[in-house]
Amino acid sequence: MDNKEVIISIKDLTKSFGSLSVLKGIDLEVYKGENVAVLGRSGTGKSVLIKIISGLLKPDSGTVKVLGEEVDKISNTALQKLRLKIGFSFQSSALYDSMTVRQNLEFPLVRNRRNLSKQDVSKAIEEVLNDVGLSQTINQMPSELSGGQRKRIGIARTLILKPEIMLYDEPTSGLDPITSIEINNLILQVQKEYNTTSIIITHDLTCAKHTADKVAMLMDGKFLSQGSFKEVFSTDNESVKTFYDYNFINDK
Image (cartoon, rainbow, N blue to C red; front, top):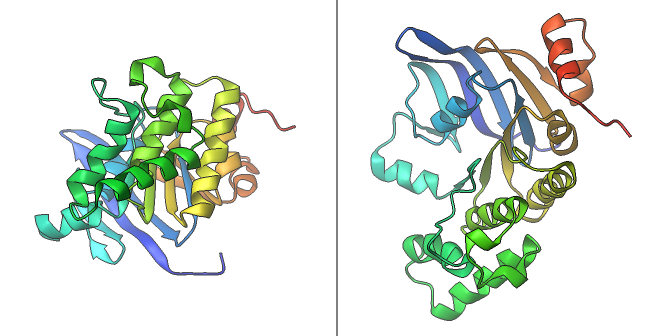
């Protein structure tokens, strides 16, 4: 990366739940404008990591700095302010079933940007829907959308507040290969058009290969290796090779 401004800095982070040690001293730096994929099997602590980054969970030890702020040390008010700069794209898309697409997108805007006129709100909704390629769904209910469309609307709802950081939790989970490619392309488009810095939590190698500038391989609570996709998987490490072989990856 040309620009070496550190947006997320994690040093010696640990987290346990009772006797279960999930994160065992991990280090990670994410630079401005970079997409970092954190790869690992289910239950390896990937989602715990992004919950700590967004202040939803507190670390046991170590430091987590986001945009220069130590997340677990700042006041609730400062944390709420910081969270407005962090977009969280949930695995389930987390849409409100009883609201139309328009209302789902309106909700975070009206709640967090109280000074906007109705016209401003409508314009922001139309723009973000256009960016995710779903202008036609504006009056539909979530139940009328496909899994891929719900995922896109979930990302749109996050983007409407123009966050500096995007956290994607398993963005291609449960999607067919064609829809997964569309979501991967959307993640790249968001990086470019919104100038976001992102962490992509995934166990999908194709997603990591297509979207990430850097890959961090999480196993047994530690990062086994970090680097480009090629660097991480050009290895004799049996655990990494097994993970690679376990995933079907299309190299064409």
